[in-house]
Length: 229
Ligand SMILES: [Fe+2]
Ligand SMILES: [Fe+2]
Image 1: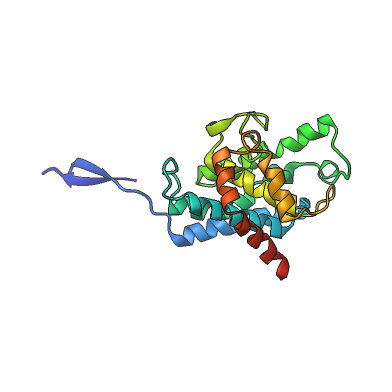
Image 2: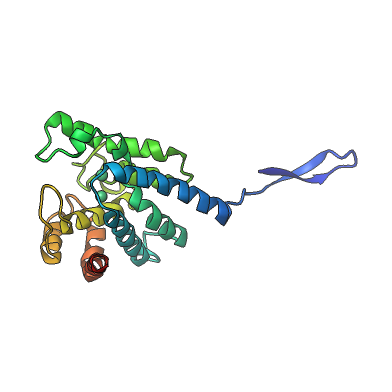
């Protein structure tokens, strides 16, 4: 907002100052509640569990906390950590636009079905276009991009992939490996870590994967604690 600061003798503004609109906690709460409702709607369609998306928030927050203060990660502020701890869960919200017969198909997808499935990234970015933080769109759009450029939807690579999406990618894949899905059994922590190691520099940002490997027991704790309830 721009506001007059000084007036001349004729009451005309002589100078202006720029004031930021303040995003109050009430506004932020309201906004988050609206997007949580959207997330609930998407969960009715997707077979991912509520626990999965909660854990993806937790792993993403954990990785970000460990990055804070490290050289090269200046963008990781307290706000970044708060935001990713809420927005990581939205990574697959675009599946609300994926036809049920493709979403719930038991066997492997045909090429044309795969193409439609992959659109959930773009649909998610579109759905989240009104969220006032770009991180929401970045996560939805780029969480399936891979470090070597072999991911989708655009095949961008390396640091072209937003940091938040590289973080959520590690969180999402780890949890998918641990979880039972229609096409696979749940894997042990050790097997999941071994599989992830093989994706260093191909699937995952190698520095982030190294960070994950240095704190992998904490990932195991997040997963195991969510199974106790
Ligand atoms: Fe996804
Ligand atoms: Fe997921």
